[in-house]
Length: 123
Image (cartoon, rainbow, N blue to C red):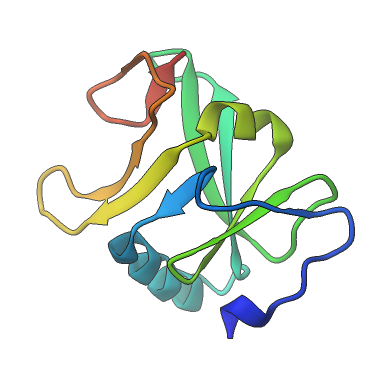
C-alpha cells in the first residue's frame, strides 16, 4: 500500500498545502505508474523556460533524493525539490480526460500569468 512507505533519510514529509492531487489526477497517476513501471514517485519540478518563463516538469522516479519533500495526496506520492516548492505552494494538480483540453492541469495560486497551453507560467 502506498501510504505505508517509510520516508527515506534526508527526505521531509510535506502536506497537501504544498501540492494537492485531485481524486481524478490520483487515479490517472496510479494507472500511469502501473503502466510505465519507472517508479512509484512522481517528481514535479519547476524549470526555466516555456512561453512565460517557468514551466512544469513531471516524471516518474524510483526513489526520492536527499532534500526532497514528499507529499502524499489522493494515493499519489509526489516529490518536490526545495527550490520548486517555493513556486508550487498551494498548487492543485487535476486531470481531465476530455478530448479537447484534457490532460493534467496545474492550478497555481502563485502564478501571475500563464500561457494558453497551461504548461508555463510567470510569478
